[in-house]
Image (cartoon, rainbow, N blue to C red; front, side):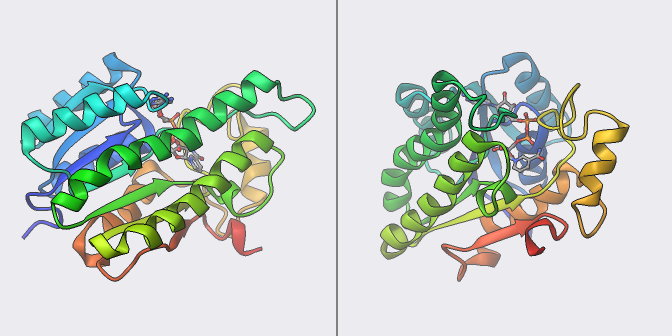
Amino acid sequence: MLRLENKVALISGGAKGQGAAEAQLFASEGAHVIFGDILDAEGLKIESKITENGGSAKYLTLDVTSEDSWNTAVAECINTFGKIDILVNNAGILIEKNIEDTSEAEWDKVQSVNSKGVFLGTKAVIPYMKENGGGSIVNISSAAGIIGSQFSAYGASKGAVRLFSKSTAVSYAQYNIRCNSVHPGFIDTDMINHKGGIIGDEESTKKTLERSPLKMIATAMDVALGVLYLASDESRYVTGSELVIDGGVTAK
Ligand SMILES: NC(=O)c1ccc[n+]([C@@H]2O[C@H](COP(=O)([O-])OP(=O)(O)OC[C@H]3O[C@@H](n4cnc5c(N)ncnc54)[C@H](O)[C@@H]3O)[C@@H](O)[C@H]2O)c1
């Protein structure tokens, strides 16, 4: 039996990076995957990749900052598959600025995608999970949601996701809805691997590796495997927890 056999999963930010890895992994484990993003061309490529490999997947446009957009995505999920078992709130953005350099608009944008997006997604699926007798919500926070970093707006947004996850867990345990947060460290995706990024060149990668006890930059799949565990029934007794996947960064 596959680990997500006949489960229906909705994943935000699935056009690339970790979300795309989760969409592919979940489909290979038997899930029907609906995944959304604002990057339609990239999302449709991932959809083709999954279906060509025999998986069940559908890409749709989803802007996590819009309640209407979430409601449309959830309605599509229900109309197509009749239920939602799993929500992965994965979409996120990073602005690499300290407090003094962050504008009010930048602050609002980061909170809107990273924090409000998680609230809206959760709010949209809960009625259907209640109806379905339960579900699993996995929220992608960050190591920066546990320890301080110089990227103030990002850290604040990810700290909010950490506590919002616990709030969801305690509020909806009575409906068998579980909710956990995941805290990745340094993952090789476009978010940090770009010109001027945390691992954008040899020098910055060297500095980043010095912060990591395991001296490793992880892959998107390293995180997706942890998300799979929390999404599946293997974690049926796990709620309100923080799964740290960071090579020891927050242990220091
Ligand atoms: N890469 C890292 O080192 C790292 C570390 C810790 C946490 N994270 C978190 O992991 C998650 C996935 O990031 P990633 O590393 O795959 O980066 P990524 O930039 O490759 O992927 C992020 C995805 O989110 C999408 N997105 C952005 N705004 C959106 C919106 N308004 N609506 C819908 N989708 C939107 C992007 O289009 C993109 O496809 C994010 O929440 C990020 O904060 C990443």
